[in-house]
Image (cartoon, rainbow, N blue to C red; front, side, top):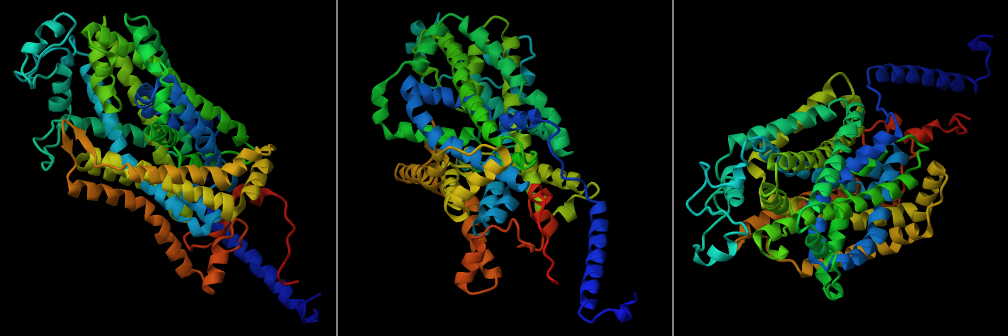
Length: 604
């Protein structure tokens, strides 16, 4: 039968079918040169990658100090409350969101809730900020590690080229006898090593100071390692985490065994856990518990969504979230025994109260602990173990965050990036740019504001609104059940709709009421220009939420009401991409496209 003998109404149908075939062939040809997005080779790779991301320096140097500072064992009351109401619900939300959509942080939020697609952009901006300053901590640790191989640790004596006449050795033999006769500006060897050799601090806050070529070399070396951990995507990341996520536990166990066998260790552990119920009446204790949950669980940074996107559709992310949250908090608790046993030993050796040696943050890792290590037999061995642990703890957090950033960018423009060596070249550009910025912009101000608690709290509030109210908590629970076979507990629905945004809002308002200018210690307070610059860093991420919403409303056709209605509906099954940079075949979730569907032709 020829086309001339066909009824007139059939000809458009055949022409449409032929056009579809031609279009499909063209699409297949365009896909040939694209690299596959990939998936985790095994479940253990996903678990180790997430563990490496969330278990970092905060578990070792922040949680133990907060526990000691805020009433010992009673600190677990607000900590566990924030964990149940905010930590686990948001952790499950982000992990399952990535697994359900098979997309990175930006594309996932633009697919689930287009009006709040700025959540993805804000999280990636915070990752960029983190890439600039977080890795410098690893450069410091590498700097210390390189000095740990000397016959005598340089921070254990005052005979170095950088030492001044004010340098004085404190120990239990001369502390009580000579302290009254010492001048006021007396410093310890570790403080001079930290301030004069490592940081090379300038004389005032208005002076940037010179760049230390030694520290710059350490920074370049760490960036070199990070690049090759990520350059092949999850194929390389999934293998490296077997070392970087497990080695810190070996070192932590070694330090724990050594610490509890030192004299004075028991006293340090008592200080760590001794309950003080009166501290629960202090609102700052609850604020500290909340911020610790947000910082240590990697919430609102887009990393969990990106890592979850490489899972198979039927992976049990529900149970994985419980396991990873338990592992994270248990590590923090265990690290406290290792840290405070050593601090108890140092306090006994110096004949002082443990309150005078307990510090948080870099002060613990680069001042208090090295000083304690210098008092031990074979100090070089324990210094090497400690700084290797610090490097490994921070390294996987750094390169997994970098992988999350690359995932988001690649998912936005797959046809542009997933060809040849374009991904590797883009990664190289990002690493070099962050390295150069890190040489001049790494200051306490940058650390305090760029990934601040205020930013994380605001993003948490809008994430809960997006899933709990706009997309629908019931629908999201159905998605999780479809993937895992488990229907999430009712408490998760309550948290996403009511409890999590309420708790985050209250904590955010409290942080604003109790806000004070950043202090650098020794009576130095950040000047007004530095504080203004810090708030600009905070706005550089959270401002992307309203900017994206305005842009989306402006680019969507229809009346204002129709635009809101369109942008509040998920586009996961939409045949059209919201943005020309994302083609339809990459916009919809891969697992959903694999499910059998009833095809209805528009020509019928």
